[in-house]
Image 1 (cartoon, rainbow, N blue to C red):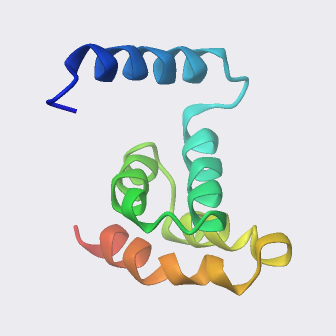
Image 2 (image 1 turned 90 degrees about the horizontal axis):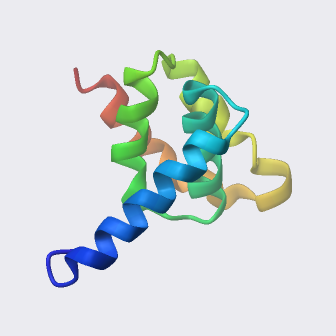
Length: 92
């Protein structure tokens, strides 16, 4: 947020503190976050967070499974992020 750098810094600090407080390891946390993004159908964050999960050692199958884990509760809509997630994962 170039327009509000202090707000961006505060937000970033809060996000980092939440990550530090988590009992989950970083890879599991990244996969869980992908599940949340998919359930909420927030496609915009998928590329960044797939790349993060991949850098933390997540496999393609783990990324797909994380996205689909919400299928019973959130419905078929979680599948809409799969094409973007797979494209980003396979890009390198």
